[in-house]
Each structure stands twice: as C-alpha cells, then as structure tokens.
Image 1: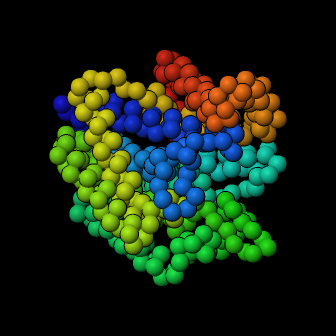
Image 2 (image 1 turned 135 degrees about the horizontal axis):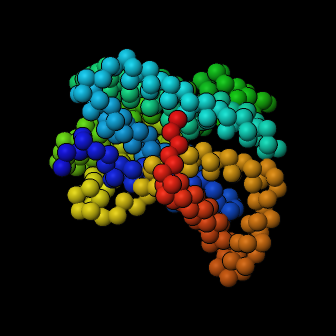
Image 3 (image 1 turned 60 degrees about the vertical axis):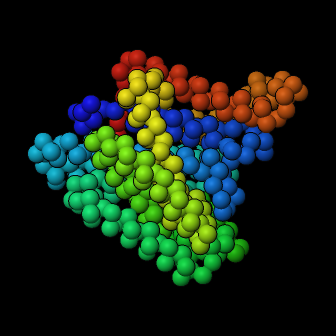
Length: 357
C-alpha cells in the first residue's frame, strides 16, 4: 500500500471519532449528573475525556505529514505551502474568536474570551506545518525535547502547580485578565485551559503526531507500536515528578496522551486501512471543523434562546429520570446531540459538501 499516494481512511476515522467524543463530553443534558469518564479531571489526573483534545492535536500533526510531505516530494513551492497554512491557521483562530464573541453576546453569564480550543488548534497547525516545511526529522525531535524540557523547567521555576497559583495561570491572568476563561477581579486570580504558556507543550503534541504521520506514510507499524508504548511509559514516569494535568498540559500529560494516540492511530491503521474494517467516524472526520464549530454555535443558541432547558426537561429528564435516573437522562441528551450532528455530516458527505477553512 502506498500510503503517500492517497488519503488514509484510518486518519479520517480517528479524527472523526475524536470529534464525536468532543461533542459527547461537551454537551450533556445536565452538568450536575455526568458519569466520571465523561468529565475532565478536577486538576491533576487524566480521565478518558482528558484524552480527547490532545488526540485531536496529535491528529493535526499526522494530517500535516500526510498532506504536505507528498507535495514537497513533488517539488511544490515551500513558501506557497507555508502561506496557505498560515491563512488556514488564521481562519481557524478567527472562527474560534467568533464563537467566543457569540457566546459573550448571547449567553447571559458568558464573557469575551480570547483563548480557546480552535485558537490552539490553529496555532498548532501552523507550527506543525512550519516544522514539516523547514525542519528535518532531527530538528523536529530536538524541538519536541526542547519544548518539553523547557516547559518542565518553567513549571518548576513557578514554584507550585496548584490551581491559580502556578506560573501558567499567573501568566494568563497577566496577559488576558478579564478575557481569560476564569478571572476573579476580587483576587486578581485567573486561569485559561487553552492559555498562552500551555500552548507550547501542545505544539509538542502536534509534533509527535507529525513524526507518527511519517511512520504511517511508510507503513512502519513497528515504530508506531514501540513509540506509543515508550511515550506511555515515559509519561507515567514523568508524572511522578510533574503530575498529569490537562489544564497545565504538563510534559507528562503530553507523553501520556501522545502514547495512547499513537497506539490508537496504529489500531485504526491496522483495522481500517489494512483489514478493511468500516471507517467509523469518517464522516465526522472529513467535516471536523464544521461539526465542532456548528455544535458550539448550537450550544450557544439553544440555551441563549431559552430552548435547551425546556427541551431537556420535557424530552429527556421528564421520563428517563424516573425510569433510569438523572445520569442516564443527561447521557441520553449528549448521545442524541452527537446523533443529530452525525446526521448533518452524513448528509453533507452524501452531497460531497466539505467545509474547509
């Protein structure tokens, strides 16, 4: 199989399953009744939900390797490719800011936030493209090591990893102030899970995906297996010094999540590309930004227009809670939300509508 010659269904499927998981964990019917695997860790630790965003950033790097490397081999102009990547990154960042602005305008308790999920995706995409275009494998590995070691040193110099007191939160408070995810004027403390310093190790996550993408192009399953296991083990050992923490995107979190993402990529490659299993999630994967951004706008409009609570109480909680309890009702809403968006991206795929930024 010439992996460089065609789009790999396994990558679309993995990306799509990740997007579906994003929608599932972001949109419960009742935030007070969510099963623990569908919640983020309160601070230190890593639940299945904490794997979702790093998986997506990892796949960003994989996709860059699959999309840009073949064009480089065909002699495409690197400057033109970099300009196109920067334009796309700016569009992704702009869409994230638009979502945040819509939330601030429509939701009564929301405020304008500068950082965000799409903003971080855009930055990581641009960084991965730049390293693909202008750095060889050795430089890429050196950058990964420098990002992780440098960030670990930065966290250590901050003196504590406690909420709001650590150097990452303090920096976000200084830079963004009221425009951070959380900010308490009375204390001057704040934090943003997609803030400034935490973007540095998230770039390392995408660069690890970039290296995995090159192994995937060569169908080097052994490298994917060994590296995935090695990352998991290194992440577990590093967590003894600096705990797994998504909010801070600690180096141990980078390696731990990248390890599982690498093994997931290998599994999808074996099952979908090589054994011909159905590419479950592919429709979400080929319209990933449309599904995520559309779902975010829907989650702003439904409560903003006063629709979500009556809808949840009458269609879900009203009859499911007495039969199975509030957790099942909340999960049913989340699953239905994912199903609605699956129907949307299914219809888009049938009509060959693919929204690309």
